[in-house]
Length: 370
Image (tube, rainbow, N blue to C red; front, side, top):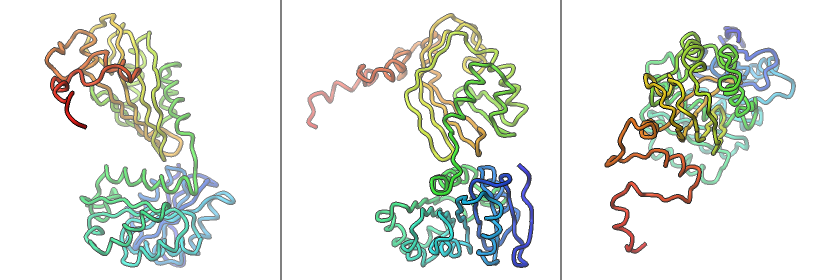
């Protein structure tokens, strides 16, 4: 994606970030001042497929005209705002000029404005906003009567926690806020991606075609993967490709299958839950580093959390119970410890199997009133 550029709108500095010629959706971004941090925020939205125009002080109508020239005909348009731009963004939504609005910050008359808005609205409130105390009550009350309103609170965060160049940047809260913003924007204005299909294509390149180059092609330029129990994977293109090419794909067990249990698709995230069954017929670097093959079969519940930027995979967090694997391989004696072996997987596949057998106190409540 080409970098954004600085321009002037009504003789006022503005910033334009393009997702490509004729983006499927556009955003006007309004703030009290357009600086490098706000520009980086625009670039982040552009990575998710939006054409973005950021303005400060200029007439929003002029910026909207420019934005519409950047996106496809009849493309959806939304507004994102921070600080002094919040009131202007809400006014655009009230006028019907945008089809979704996301704001960071609180204004005393916000509740009244939101009641007059028919499109989806997301409001992110950081610690300085939450200091308004009782003044927030009317806005909070609207959540129960206005289903298109989403209210998110970040009590430990500064005003510009979402700005990676700001002193109060908080990366985890910023990532969560961005996902929540997309959750409001995408259903209303797009762009829409089949994230589940994209993830399965990535997995196919890993586990079926065994092609490291094709696997990396499904990802952004600087992705990362973390297998949480063993801290294996990689950060950035070169480290991750090295991991896939020499330590993951060639070290996969030959006998392996998945039984999928659930699939949850969000605005930019897919969560897969499954039971993996494999034979420990090779040293599996990412799963059992340093453990020689035992020839034993293992069944283990696994969760993959995959996050996307646009139509490219950004990162994966993969979770499983390492203790259960070690029990099944005879490397840990579970007696007297709160852990289970293959029973974990069997219980996931058959919910009728016994529960609470590790709880020695379970029988003590057998005759107690409910």
